[in-house]
Image (tube, rainbow, N blue to C red; front, side):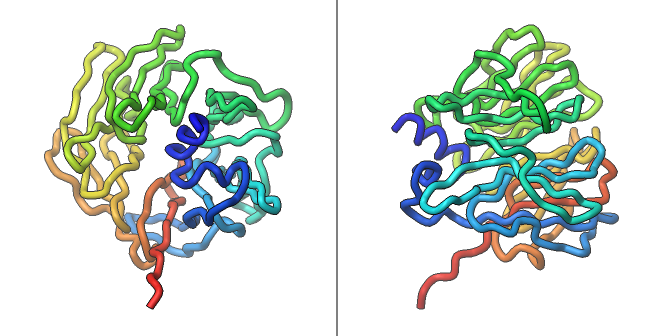
Length: 298
């Protein structure tokens, strides 16, 4: 059951469905929209299949959108990395594998890094090229839940603990040294562009609060600013604007400010809650995850 506990946190639904679909998984859909001056248009759903569709990420050239996609085969279910070619609208799998992959992240050489659930249940960070051998990037640490690459080949890592209070944010230097930054944390990881500052969140009562670690000065700033109510997922728009999704909206924050401002209302496109989101390199496309409201039976 230890493996199932780990997967439960990563995928946010019953991990048993990865082995055998016993209960219906919550529905998550990915939408793509044109973005211009904090307004969206031409909104369309990307995924054709149901179930868990999450964690969108654009390729570095903006030609492709990748995401974690639940693939069902009868009663069995597996997570794979799906892709959309924006110019043609063609969708498919980035690469068919025998293992489950989460959190696709683009590497400088255009391959992807991803959290891979190995055959024995170990979760490690892998490099997955479009062609050629996919393999673990390093043996340790294990139990990786999420990751974000820094400017010098370093990493912020979400490491799964024995329970939610034991989950931790760790910093891994490019030489492999590990430093625990915080426990009892949220899932968001985001490096500020043009800096050596890695941002994450810590729990503060029933909310999450913004924290960051500066690798240059080895300085940790903990719980500096509360996120909006229900806010969890972060994304830097540029070096001076951090975005967070909360409810059906996205809010912005300028470093040094003491409050969040409404940046984009997505309620007309998402009848539910918006979680993870991604913005294309040219900032002309927005991909976001919507979990529709579940209508109660009358």
